[in-house]
Image (cartoon, rainbow, N blue to C red; front, top):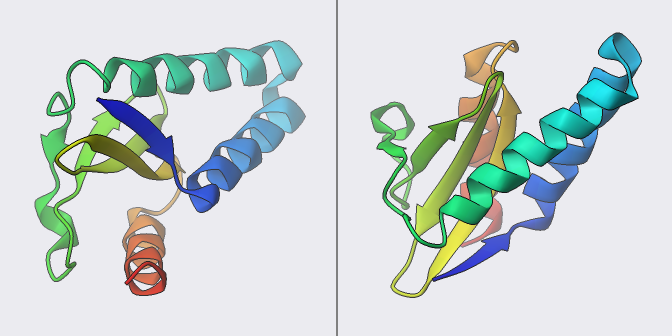
Length: 109
């Protein structure tokens, strides 16, 4: 199965890396990016490994989430693709993720 990233999800990861680099250093930022990237690559072989996300009810999509140490990878699965929709730093307010997904759901109709 092919793994694709929405541009917004790529932007999320860059922003997380930027914040981690500022607060914890570049080595930690590189480790964070590597961890997220490795997890998303696993989704090609195991697309349903992430849990179903009930908290995003009302969306037109079925979201799944896979957590790394501090980040949540939110994705959706189609017949032949895994689409990475968002990468979210779990140390932030969870309501921000819900808002982010609602906005992206509207943009991608």
